[in-house]
Length: 245
Image 1: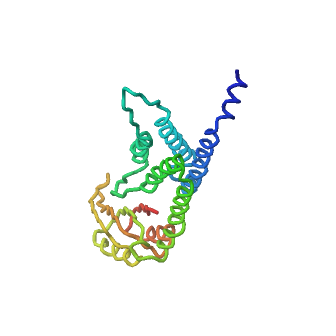
Image 2 (image 1 turned 180 degrees about the horizontal axis):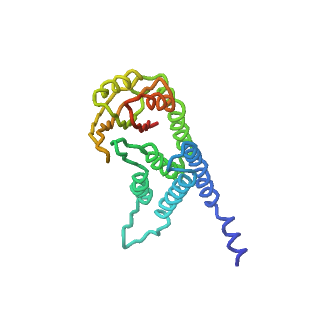
Image 3 (image 1 turned 90 degrees about the vertical axis):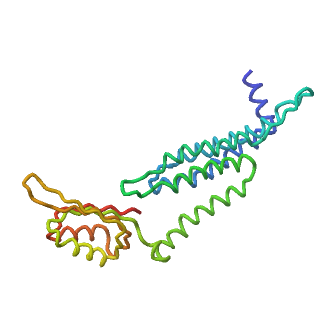
């Protein structure tokens, strides 16, 4: 019985084509997966491979099922070959939404990863239909933008593209020195976008002022150097720095 099944699989002319499509979709998805793994993003190697491979499988099933259904004289049966594949595009949005994060300072992260999830599904669908060259070209083009164009613009592009969002939380002992602190940050190449000041009192009735600052930073020094210098300022009691890359 087993030999009959194996012989039937080998002789089935469509199987090599199906397996080749799934393999190509898997290999192309590995490019996206490795890039996300290197950058420690939610969409990793395994997730990308699963999305692209099974999207390809569903596309193949959707196309072939439309032609497998036998014709009937009493009923006019019409089927869309890509009906099932179309649902993949809609359903993949749930995975993409899970990769998008909203931080406390209203900064949004994970959009690129969410787009990559959608892209991995697109690779599977494109390869499943048979657009091998188009799928490969799309992957190479996206990787070129992410790994070459974006870093170049971040280094040599307009000032707004070279800045990074940052969040600073200071505890200051002297309210008169708040202006000095703001000027110091501006001299370090930072532009303040939002400032919130809160008065706090400790258990010993000492009064402090907490500054929650959101800014666009193009610092002249590294984060560690900046932290060390700001910590050395006498009127700064504590400091919390977060720079989003």
